[in-house]
Length: 270
Length: 87
Ligand SMILES: [Zn+2]
Image (tube, protein in one colour):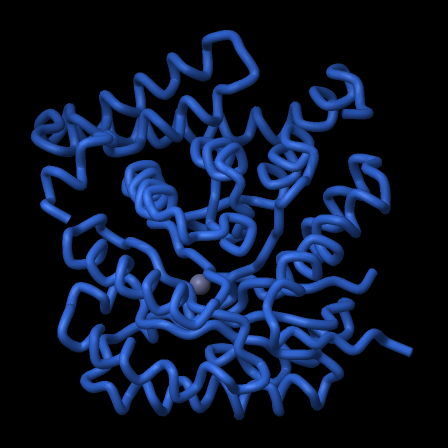
């Protein structure tokens, strides 16, 4: 089955991974900007990274028939450095019209601090100013519930935010309902250690019906599995769920969400 | 949901049994070390208590155990946070 991985960090993956994903049915992916495993020293470090996201990765992906899209920001972890964050936010417009940019992301919180929230709000302003969609990272483990609620507060307190153009990622059992009930899109991340298994993700699909719900691998430089979305497809089939529902979650929903971005031009397989 | 409770349980029985055994063995290992080297203290003792509460949730009724377990392991949310952080 053709599928879209809406959240995967291909700069950390090998070309062999692209080949494997293509063989598994991946036709498109979106790569939010995030932490590199170390703090970058300067705004130029981010400029180089954005160049990689908007130029290098689309070319690598195209070799395997995969369309690559991206999101730009300074991630929540490095957002603790407010002055560097402001420099990066000021530089983002240099890249915002690149053909594969879908919006601002993955912005969010990490340890739910005042500095992180400050930078989150400034990213929101940037997205509003340039009419960009937003992709959101919610914190891990014990910080997730509090951080997700804080993020939803900041978004909901601003009437200029169109909730149907915001994807809140890494939802789990205790955060999914609030995100969907408030009218946002929700993304489930299938991740071996800190997030969600395919089985629990399918439980959430069964409980919610799959409306405005996406699934991703978040494959990155840490313990992660870039082929996690095919694992989810397999688990849904194993449970006898309909092909229509499977396709909705792994293809139609990401397509519908991304289509709200003016740069999303998707070429269907002929 | 198009599977029966019986079929799900039959399919998962060995898997859940194995997971419970792992937890039992983890607790045994902690207890053996505690009797040799002294009891848990500080944050470790709090964590052990939290795991005990988690098991109580597993023993309770209702199809929202995963959600309740997640909340047990979560920091509290205060709706007044913006005022407190002055943001
Ligand atoms: Zn990510």
